[in-house]
Each structure stands twice: as structure tokens, then as C-alpha cells.
Length: 177
Image 1 (cartoon, rainbow, N blue to C red):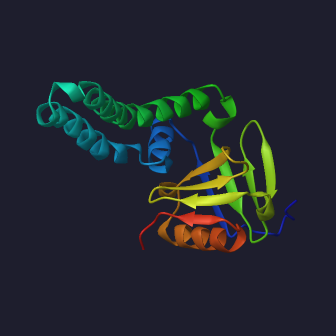
Image 2: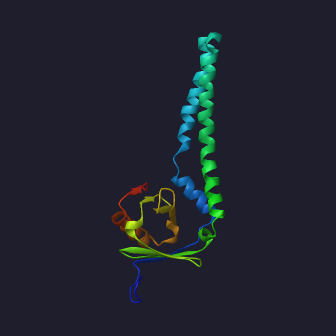
């Protein structure tokens, strides 16, 4: 518990929206789109094989073309599926839709909303991940606090990122500095 005279190092409030959840999910997810170029190349190779190898290789070229088309579909659909899943989870949790007030201390953080109050020691966090627009503080493998960097002042952003880097053992940054 924080004593009445203790002041947080950083203090801010966040109210997440579906759009932010979608953007955060897209920023954080594996770059499925990287499968597009190999998919296109594989499909072209399969189609070219029909003309180069002749009809006797039709089965193999069909398999190669199909594999390429599967990669293309995978690359195009997977990001959309993951974003829809994230939004569905957001919609199903009233607590996530509430405004959350964060108080960041050197040894802990306190998250308060209309529905709950949570006090976490930094050691509780499994890992942290930074992107250009968000900081994710993971309580478990797939459960995280999503903090939009836009909710912080530039000074708070640098303080917060430094504190996270020091206090959370596994901090992964995708931010180019």
C-alpha cells in the first residue's frame, strides 16, 4: 500500500478503445505478411514448372502452386484473424473497457479502475515488450497491460521505459532509438 505522503514517479490514465486494441495487436503480432513474397515466388515457380517441365510434372507443379497459394492466404488472413480475436476478447471484458489509472513507483505499480484496484510488484511481471506506440506489461504468456505511449508525456515515456528496462527482467524493445 502506498502511504499518503508517497508520490508516484509517474501517473497517468488510459481508456483503451477497440481501435487501439486492433493497432496494438497488429504492432505486436508476428509479421505474417513476410509469407507473401515466398508465397508468390512459390506459386510462380509452380506455374512456370507446368510450362518448363511439361504435363508429366503436372502433379508436382500443382502441389508447389498450391503451397504458394496457401502461404499467400496465410499471410493475408492471419493478421485479420488475430485482430478480430483481440477485439472479441476486449468486448467480452467490461474491466478492459474501463478507464484505468496507473501509478508507477520504483518498486511497484498500482492500477485502479472503477471495478478494481491492483497493486503489483515489478517482480510479478513475466516480461515487457515495447513497440513504437505501446508498452505491454505481461502478467502471463498472453495476458498483458496495454499502455499506449500517447497517454504519457515525452518525459514520462523515457522515465517509464527506463524503469521497465531496469525492473522487468525480460524486456524486448522493437523501438528504434
